[in-house]
Length: 552
Ligand code: ADP
Ligand code: MG
Image (cartoon, rainbow, N blue to C red; front, side, top):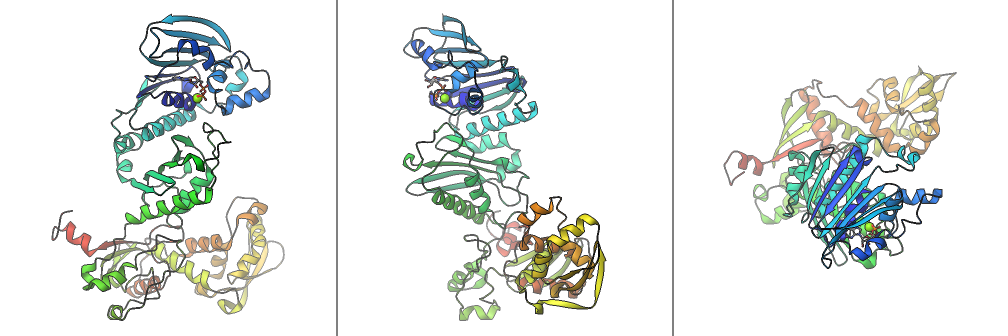
């Protein structure tokens, strides 16, 4: 409802919009703007449906909920609240004040006022109390309202917005179009500063906005905000294009903060679906999808924590060019192997041209805080997270083995394992998947099974522990599990449980082995959940930080 009122004010060309909310909107929603106003003689037209839109059918209720159709917002609101409209248009000497209660006109009088409109919605649903209980909890409604208003303020940065909730000023922008400044009101200062600027345009699509770096995430996708042609829209496909842009880079269950403002030529938007509706239909959704995904990917890449290899170190420009191919592949999907031309000149520095997104050879420095491994590369310092790195190593070893027997290590004597009923049930559901990665399991009486073989990679571990690590502990019903469970998830789970942990002492030999194994990974720089396995501090950064060169 706030959205419709806000959009009306914007449509009226307002440069200043103030919103006041009481009791999360149930008591009062007031929107004041300095837009073009409503001409006195049109005041009826503005709410022309009000007389007929008394609540008479469930269909009407439905409409009120969605407020989806042009010209119905005000009339629908009028039907279910005490609505007051005060307005004056430029062409009128005086304005008017118009009160409607539950769709019945209660009074109209001329008033003196400046050009613009005030709309006050009081006692929402006073005449349809049943609807009240469909509103979300006050705290949720309030949060939704402030999210809505702040995003409109961010998009329409040239408009002065103020939002007062329960007597408190929650947001106020000054219309000076500085979006960073608005971001710092929307998020905490640090988050606001960290957001990366997005910018893209081609012949039919322009994109602007902000998206979070890899270390700034949320546990829900609620902070993925999309404006298309000036309207806030919720489109799960396009949101997933943004998420896709982060594919493989974020931990499972983490989502970016993204505010994306897209302008698409109107010809590309299906006109049959009305623009005031939150859902929209695009003529070429996949084109837009791809553009979003790529742009997000490029944006993150441009600010990636791993600095590009500084050319200076590699002596010749020719080498530098080859080496620049070695950056993590941010442009395509993570698993697509990159091709790097083999080059004679690269041999002296022992870079294997086939290991593309790979690491250079690293020299072990030592373990830090029993959690990280410090190593030196030709291009600076690497700090490796031992748990994340080991997860990555196990993940690739298990994923790349074939399902054939050779990758299984048969046990000299099968081991019997008894499991609690729910776990056993899950085990039974996952027998095929387990077999696919090298666990050969045979049922052996109720609640008990025999482990015949384990994946080669895990042969040095306790077979029972290895098996348990593979079984989903998901609380889902077995049926759901079968639908969502897959090989990759299972492997990720094994890696998480069996990888060496932070806090574990590693011998020099083990540290070296970990680095060697990581060097052999196809995607050494993130763990299977997408967390970085390492931080790279380039020589360049070191020199700047120590003031040996340039400024910080
Ligand atoms: P719609 O915006 O789809 O036309 P609404 O029910 O939201 O339908 O509004 C009806 C009409 O009332 C608008 O078309 C506009 O002419 C007028 N109106 C509503 N709010 C304002 C406002 N804040 N300033 C100027 N005119 C307004
Ligand atoms: Mg409207």
